[in-house]
Each structure stands twice: as structure tokens, then as C-alpha cells.
Image (cartoon, rainbow, N blue to C red):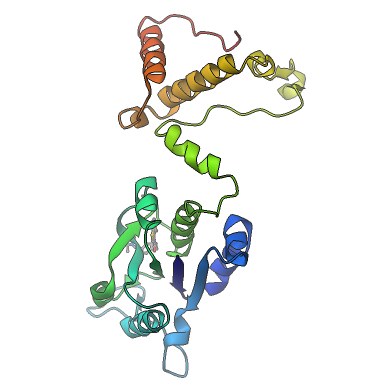
Length: 260
Ligand code: 9D3
């Protein structure tokens, strides 16, 4: 799969793409990512990428021609078809579902906007428009990195442990269970009592551990993200745990302790 990221701040994304899981995938040739400086596709002496809005108003607008030239160059180099994604606050919300869909594509271009926006005619060359959520950022670079990260980790051979990617589908729609590592106890805050790892995890009883983790995942989802439960694809055991937890809450019963 190829990614081409078009931006006026290539340095901002170069660094992120050079390290971690993405950096390693690039080194190993599993992934081909190129960062394109929009200014390299200008033709004037001052490499101007923006201009004042027709009709007046504050701020500047990204000019269309450098974007068109960048897309022409990418198409000449990569071939067709390109999926051209404009990162924009007007876009559809990017979700895990969108990440899975994009992971099946061959050639993705991410266009990063800046300023007040981009000339509307650029949309004639755009396949889709994505936002990462309802908050105002200063540009599309961080959103492009979010999309790139979420898509790339789904590609075969990118995340070392294939199982951790596969288990997401097993765990689908629920929050993660809590994790612990050594030591078995740590000091509590402000000199309070030590905080111990839940005993079940030290018991060696793997059936118990599996059930405890499942129940924790269901309970945390019910507590923190009940909205996810409507879409979650729970197995029989998880559904029983959920019904039981909800029953307990309606009855105002004391919470069941974690310890077996
Ligand atoms: C909605 C505010 N706009 C009103 C004039 C101006 C504007 C604000 C921020 C125009 C562009 C931007 C820069 N943001 C992005 O390019 C962007 C973004 C975001 O701000 N939030 C979530 N997802 C995205 S994707 C691209």
C-alpha cells in the first residue's frame, strides 16, 4: 500500500513517520509513504500556496493549482486509481470502521488543509473528505497522521504481534480489561495502603482469569462507554455478565468485589 501526504509542513509529519511501528514498517519495505511539500508544486518565485478569499473576509485560502499539480505528479508516479482524501472539519467522521475500509485500498493520498480552508474546486479531484472529530485544530496534518496510523497497523506484517490485531475482532465493541505487571504491590497515594494486583491474576487458574477479564471488560464498558454496548457483538457469556451487572445496578445492590 502507498500513502502520499500533501502538506505545507512536511517537517511536522516526517518525524512521526520515521519512528515507531510506521517507521519500522517503512524500513522493512512493508509500507511506502511519501511526504510531499505543497510548495514544491508552485511555479512562482516566492512559492506561494495561499491567497485572499474571493468575496472578501478574514484569513487565507489554499490555492487550487499547486494541489492539482501535486495530484498529477503523484498519479504519474503511483498510477491509477488514487483515493484522494481531504482532511477537513467538514468531512465524515473517521472511525475504526473507516480504517478497515481504507486498509483494503492500494494507493491513498491525504491532503492536509491549513488556513481558513482550501479552494472549493479542489473537491473536484477529491474522492472523500474525513474529519477526526468535533474539535478545532490548526490544520489537517495531525488528522492525516491519525488516519495513517490507524490504517497502517491493520496491514499484514506491520504490527509484530498479529494476535493483538486479531483479538480486536474477538474483543469487538468492548473496552479492554485492566492490565498489571510486576511488582505485585505498589505504595498507595500519599503513604496510604499498598495497592495489590487482583489475586485472581496470580492464581494460575486460567479459566478464572479469562472469566474475570471478560467481566471487567463488560463492566468497564457499561461504566465508561455504555453507548458502545448497542453495537457490541457480545458472546453468550458476555451477554449473561452484562444482564447480571445491569440487574445488580437496578436493584442498587452492593458491587461485587473483584477478588474471587
Ligand atoms: C470549523 C472552523 N473553520 C471556520 C472558519 C475554520 C477552520 C478551522 C480549523 C478551518 C480549518 C481548520 C483546520 N482543521 C483541519 O484542517 C482539520 C480538522 C480539525 O480541525 N478537526 C478535526 N478533524 C480535522 S481534519 C482537518
